[in-house]
Amino acid sequence: MKKILVGLKRVVDYNVRVRVKSDGSGIETDGVKMSINPFDEIALEEALRIKEKGAADEVIVVSIGSADAQQQLRTGLAMGADRAILIETDVSVDTLSCARALLEIVNREDPFLVILGKQAIDDDNIQTGQMLATLWDRPQASFASQLDIDGDILHVVREIDIGLEKIEVDLPAVATADLRLNEPRYVKLPDIMKAKKKPLDTLPFSDLAIEPGPEIKHVLFEPPSERERGIMVDDVQGLVAALKDKGLV
Image (tube, rainbow, N blue to C red; front, side, top):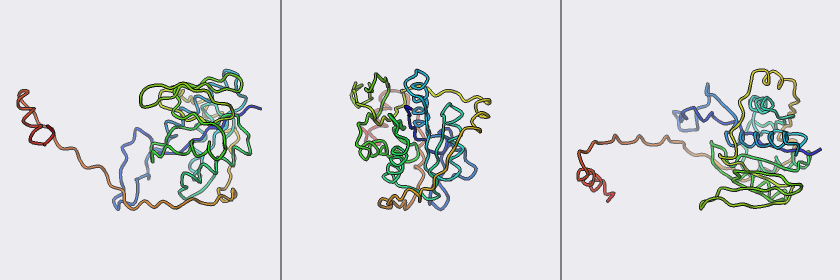
């Protein structure tokens, strides 16, 4: 059976204005809407489209986090994924440990393609996909804006600083989804009801026997400083004078 594995991360919804806790110890999440990381949602949509074209038989979604992440996995199942796996842990896991945990699932499920979001909007590390490919010793295609499968070859259009790059990699491989890869489908109520009957397996993180990576401590969170109020100028000369006052010209 040809499987695609997709990683889903639980993050604060991108429409929510992020607030720092009063003591600066982190981000306020109590009573805040949580959703699938947008780039991961794009990754799942692409996996589903590949399956609908007949190039895959099963799409599996996996998440690492607390029991609350089941909500995002159920959303992934409602979108069309066949199975879900939650690697459950109540502590924050560093990026390398996340990649090692995903490798454990890869070794168990033997997918021919792993698709992850290029980054998570909470930490913006942009590392998990690359680390997983290295640990798995398989090719990677990051920042993908187009994916096409031809036999055992994955054709990829990548977004790079100077434009677009076309590459080919041998499957199995890891790909990370960029923003312009697709537009995720809307989840309908009947699909949400059906998703409740789909299998969702829970695996304790401690059962994976993964040595934790170097601990990263967040010392302080601070909100960005408020923007200065703009000023009105009457003409170009006034604009130039205002810019000179600020030392910008």
